Length: 160
Image (cartoon, rainbow, N blue to C red; front, side, top):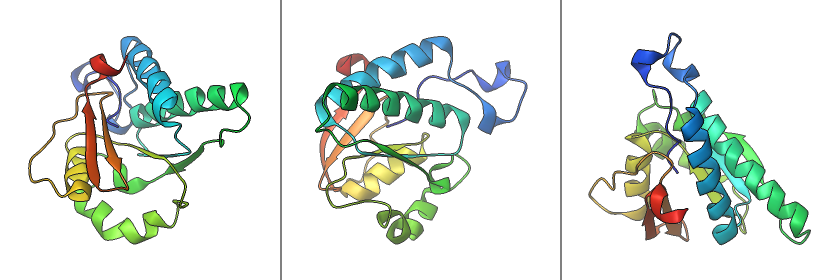
C-alpha cells in the first residue's frame, strides 16, 4: 500500500520524513483501510518510519482493531516499523534485507506493507516478478497471493 495523500513538500516547513497526511488524505486513507480490512483482514502491518506512512499504517491498524472488537475470532494486528520501506532507502535495501524482514512474518499472516513511491512499486515488481512499474497511486493497493502472484492492483477510488 502506498501512503495516503500528504502535505506537499513546498507547503511544508519541516523535513520530508515529517510531512503528514492532509485532512483529505486521512479521510481517503481511512476509507481505503476500512475496505482493505473488510476484504483481507490484515494481521501484520509493515511501515516506513516516515510520518505519512505511519499515519497510513495507523489507519489500517485502527480499522483492523475495530474488526477484532466486532469479531473476537479475528487475529489482532501487529505493527512493525521497517526502515527499508523509508523513502530515502533504495528498494535494494528491501531486497537485501528480505530474509530478516521475513522473520517478522508468521505463516498465517496477511501482510500490509506501507511505503512510498517509487520504491513501493519497485518492491511490488520484485516480489511479483513483473517487469513494469505498476504506478500505485497514493492510498492505492496491490495484492499479492502467496507473496508473489499479483492478483489485484487497486486505485483508492475503486476500493472505497
